[in-house]
Amino acid sequence: FHGVRAKDRLHALGVNPLLKNQTQSSSAGEKGQQLGRPLSTREKFHYVRANELAKLGLTREARNEIGELQKTVRKNLTGVLWLSHLYHKAQGYAESLRLLHLYKDFTTKPKERNLSSKFWKHFFPLAYEEAVLAYAKYRKVDPFFVNGIIRQESLFDSQALSPAGARGLMQIMPATGKKLYPKTKLKKPFETDALFDPDLNIRLGVKYVSQLNKRFRKNGMHILISYNAGPHVLKKWLKRFGHLSDQDVFIESIPYPETRRYVKHVLRNLGIYKALYSPS
Image (cartoon, rainbow, N blue to C red; front, top):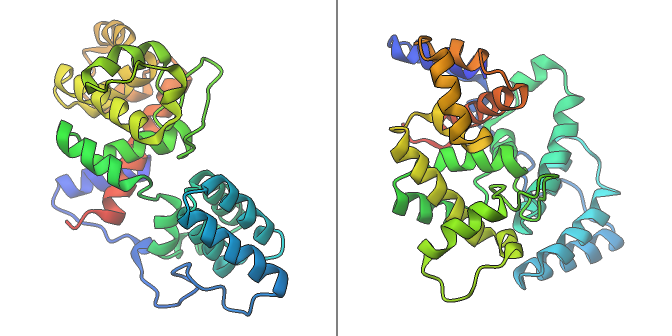
């Protein structure tokens, strides 16, 4: 978070720092598309099944086959990117992130800084891209902001269920979903478990972000506090900390540790998504 904020401040001063992790590689292993060694007979069996099941839309079954491959594939950079690429094809973004996290955690800091943008694009994927782009464009919301929220809320797990009952990719509470649902003009009656459907969840989540966007004049910090803790909590904190004009100081003053971490992580995600994918 602090690295992203520092980069933003330097940019505001007219300094554009180069990111080391933007280096490209032409290696097939870096692209995550080839393993770099022949597959065993057993691995070929699971590999073919995983691809065919993914093409048929049987993503859960495809992920099970990739899980079998994960048992035998070496967890070096080539191996984890190859597995990650397969998981992405089967919408296994959460499984991919767990695998990449393990690799990153066992990598020394100097080596981590030299990881290519291919690795970081797997680590910060444009998951469910078609739905995110369509609904974000319709609601005039930054799609990278939506990606950042989804990554923090659910790690792209469409079946995520919080102890409080929030559901799906954008962790929508049933009461919120029910309130937003009529605006979709869908004919089917609202069902709580429909929030596990990726398309509907993103559709409702982006609608809610759009409402907060208008209410708080596109102030990302205020939107995220409201999304995590509720607009009533933000109102109370604005009264208490409204004299703090510096956004970073305001964030550090947030009384709820969970909300403070949440705001930092989503803003960090937003900065990284822009660095990796924005043409500018």
